[in-house]
Image (cartoon, rainbow, N blue to C red):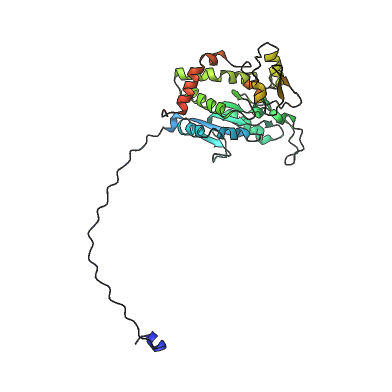
Length: 304
């Protein structure tokens, strides 16, 4: 008798002996077909791009991300994002082909001054992305006393500290314009002779803005530029693009001409950049369809 029978007076159940299992015939597994590997574009054919954030609101970076599928196409086929504190795991500025710099430079912040100078040393092309980087924007009106850094009171465009190659003004710049500049930068650095000529034609107006720089007396990119360089020259056609592009509604159309409220202007450069009579190059106008075809072809490499 088992231990359970002695304690509870029950008979111990005997477990049936396991039945002998017959060996099963081996089952043949279907042979998996190997899928053809997709040919990946070599990284060597890409350009390297970085986003350097200075004193700004990150709105320009949001505008860059707003390209959605366009951004993925650029990163898949044309550019490697090697530096961006928000999107890339890198803490030191590496060497790169194109640096997109957002925000103005605080003169009281030694680290910011060193960072923008290091960006100029390590980037082949420096792009002032947005009104703060190009013209100072609303940061020009800072007089210090803010909660986190009260001693920071002097903010200047990056062109006051380093040489800049391309300006993309606006507050924030149009996502399509940022995308187009990235594509044209690729064609300029990696394309053939014909593609390089198209890229130079497209970038010429934006490079002209950078050559003027924020140091020039007539290049503060406020509504005064529209008055002196367009309206007073008899070039205004009353399209209203400047008023539509102003982020603070400082421009209104009156009797077919723009009226600028100077007290409301934040000097972002959006109106002057949007005006079709301000800086637009005839080289771009004459080759507009070819340039657009090149951009559309780049953004649809599969022909979809």
